[in-house]
Image (cartoon, rainbow, N blue to C red; front, side, top):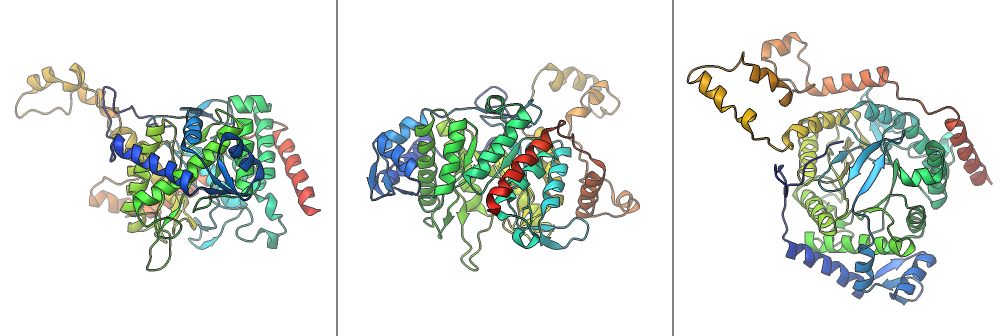
Length: 493
């Protein structure tokens, strides 16, 4: 976990900001205007009934226009801080302020194999490998799948597609003690995963008190809440379990081709989902996610990098601060197809900017090819960068010891500080890389002339072959497998 001090307090950390309070208020009012004037499609009758009962205007069966006062009342119910625990019940992530936490991404279709370098469909073993890697790396705070059980066509392997969310969850749970952010295909899948998580924690009440998992779900842009995501949202609200409900419209595709317009629409999508959750259960813990970036009109792709993407995420964090709630962002991602100069540049820049704005959950570490391909080596590179950020973003201490005025006076002009106790005492204050090379050319050559990508690959393989995560307690895996077998029987009928 990386905790960075609030820049409004003494000992400021580097912190990037862009909008004034007046501009943030303007965006908020624009989102309320969209909800009142245009409204949203809500494809779950139970959610429509909640909004109707709160004073929203319902047209037909599912077109709902929501008055601003209903949304603002719901905002008042949101928790400002969400504490996430690890599998063993120990505090792991405090989602508040400028605390930044890092992890990989979900449901990715392909992986760059660490042994063959081939791009191939993911499978359950890839989810396990990603979990083992993240479990080992000290600066990775949470785990997501980085793959899909059965790849893009689980039925061809004799697997039940509707149950792959339970397979994915179990693959992560069995190979890390760190918090898990998961996605699911249906409310039934989330219910089964909650049941499995309650087995780990002991019971559902303890799971609610010390959650170690967060559901990731999304509305559909523009301005649609589909039935199954709403069922999942309402279930999490009922159980008071944390939920990321992140809107990510594509500028010029599913949102206006302007940052302000797409952000206002994205906020409207999130705010309306949040309102439904709070109407169902006041105080339901939700994490703010809004904004994405533009479509590349030359080829119709949706890349992850570029100034508009970074600005959208900067603004989204400022809006989260405006509302006083945790946020969801991304970093450590690249649109490159292999681990090359483009990959390192984009991953470093996106990760640095997400940290500099103080986003709370920074996910998708290791994403390549616009979220299509997983790179475990890129996760290891991100871990190295996050390690350096802990030094860069640490508030500067200025006191008698660090100013060292007496020492400077004693050494005087033309002296040196190499053998001084003060130098030794502060060696650990300075960041030293593990993989980044700082040797001279001859030393580098004598050590094998290894490029960084080769060292990253070797480190991944070493971790996978040498690290054994803490196993689940006796009987837990058997109980979890029982839930999965029950789900398989349901879907075979």
